[in-house]
Image (tube, rainbow, N blue to C red; front, top):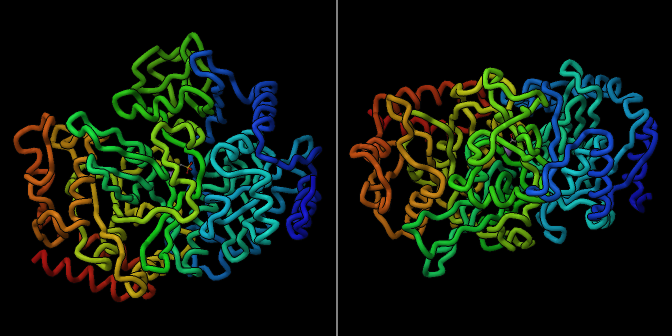
Length: 579
Ligand code: SAT
Ligand code: MN
């Protein structure tokens, strides 16, 4: 196959000449093609078929050195280093291109080169953007079919728009010493070599829909964010749409698919997106969100009927599992799964407890969003959904209250910029270290955070109807390590307070860090909480918050003169009011 788009055809020809594949396959996105990809991977041993209880489900075991994003090998190659900012690793574009050309030369010999046209967002939405990923991995092609609107329809849009992000990927030899994920935002280009893992290899996701898109969004006046989008419907039929930014492996998928607790009969929760939101102001000044993705690449361990029944059901069929364990009867198994026992661990060895968890802590499911029992058809709406509240959050065992509301937009930008969270297994490196993760975008913002905060702040000049902003923390613990808040479905109780605040239906307690709920305004009916837990969850320790604000101030200083004065003023205001 070929395309009528000359620049796409010329690029594919050029890449074929560089990488020298044996075959070129243009993906049409059909179900037959997906099945052919699966059959091919079963033949060559890249996939293992799971048993009949998991219909059309497969296990992929990645190279044990290739199980997470690699932030230290991920670069933004803008022409000017300052545009990438201290939040990114930077390499000069010429140097990066020379390095990558060397790696890509002849790397597809003996392999098939897949050309994958994809569209991030509904095919007919003005907010959507297209890309083409060239890869030598059938696993990537199959995952892209589940995660994006991939194939003929996307190609038709590319031929109409004549604009697309170019993504070149090869698994190379899966050698960690020959692994790089490069972004050239000015050229709308991505080059990724040496990894087959999700965020490093499915280039539509973090590389395009966040790093490149955030750069484009700044130029074009919108936002590309690491946010879930969820619809909450009250028993009276009132609907709200919330967007929430949490770092990887902090519960975005669970919140997006939340199951109301028993005490909340009549509440309905539907998923628009679980990881990425593209936010635009419409002609009326309303912020609207689309989910650019069409599937979920979620963390498997911890998923069960109690924590997330929807996700558990969703992954019973037509799912690709990566790096889970299996039982003796070849069922997938992971930590906190309530049935079965592991026989073979994620590396393919007989399971032995002393070797660590059976499933890798960052093992993943890839599944089409259509399989989500609470999928909202509005995920396909070209106009997106109107956002009432933006919620920031992280994993903090101390300090951050269960929920608080920013005083206004500029304060909310400071709250987002100050987010910190314990690191998780979603990226290589130490787990459980608290680090700053502004807007949950630390690994994903394709440009200088100082400019990014300025871009966020600028929205208040463009609309008087911006969403309210909040911060939540589901992960607060006591001295003994016990979680103070049950989390999961019970988070709806907090979302209700957030919605009531957006609707001006409930008062709050004003504190230096923002508005907190009065304890009686969080509905705890049916919850078994210990006496002081709610008081602790809603307390603000001024001395500790002064330390926190000082540390946020030091963090902002790392970005030097580019940090907007307005943000520094907001910071000063909070610090002063802490006394
Ligand atoms: O980056 S991934 O897409 O692999 C998952 C994540 O870390 O959010
Ligand atoms: Mn993510």
